[in-house]
Length: 397
Image (cartoon, rainbow, N blue to C red; front, side):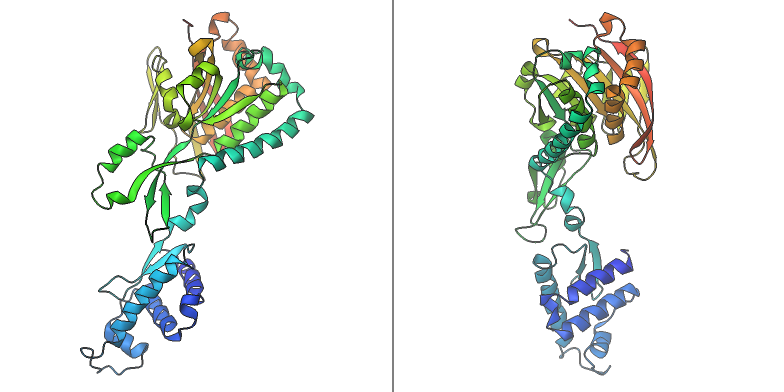
């Protein structure tokens, strides 16, 4: 059951609302029902009549409908409250018909409203703020990043004049509407639904309230987005390279012909880029959440469960660079969790760790294009260790 302190906090707000503040009788009735429920007591009509309305225990409940009328009106007052003043309450109170016991339910639209209404326009606006901050940082400390243009990993992006596009993997959301009234709706992130096709398959399995769920053009970004764009912004501005930003959900095939592309995100959010990796050694499954790498033998890696936030975690991240349309290049930083993208971007934009990686694996010209797998270990999404597990060169055609 929801914590008593949180229930009492919401009850106080409710009783002091416009809907209830002018009615001492309804305040007393709701307080009584809540207190009884918290004590695991299901009150009966006769006890409510005695304790709240002052009637004797031998009252004629067959002909005296006062309790039932008040309960009926109380339900209507609760509905009205949650449609107006109580929209943002973290817990809702409900008195089911046929019972006088109160049901306490967490209100996800209030708890997660700041996340669920975070659409792609606000995603990009947030990232642009990060970019502006980093431009100021770069102006004061650009020498270190500007030296990376001669490094094999980055030279295609820093020395050529081909436009650069940063593609950020965004998560699919679907919409549930008319939750409390016609104006209320909820955006839902289901880790197994990552495209309109996935949504159609999911919707076909729904038997109740199917008309209340629908596709959405709203998406969600992970913690990796501002942190990795921050690092790339420093690198690109230090080398006088302009760039555009796009979410993977809005990436078009013609973009591959126009830009050198840097993708950052989870495997689930590759979008059309997924079709480009069919000839590479890595693949992934969503259920279970697993990275597969088929080189000299088949390797299978599963990251720490994403439901654990305040704990040790590991991730297995792919960094792959290969040619695409019109002799353009794509560089992929893919992972299962935020920590994988954050770690590998930092690892390959830090001159010290980049030098070590390139010295061991990219000294030969034929290794210009490659794919690699890193194991990342950390705590609460803070990186402690990065280890390279696999490296294979990709021969350009």
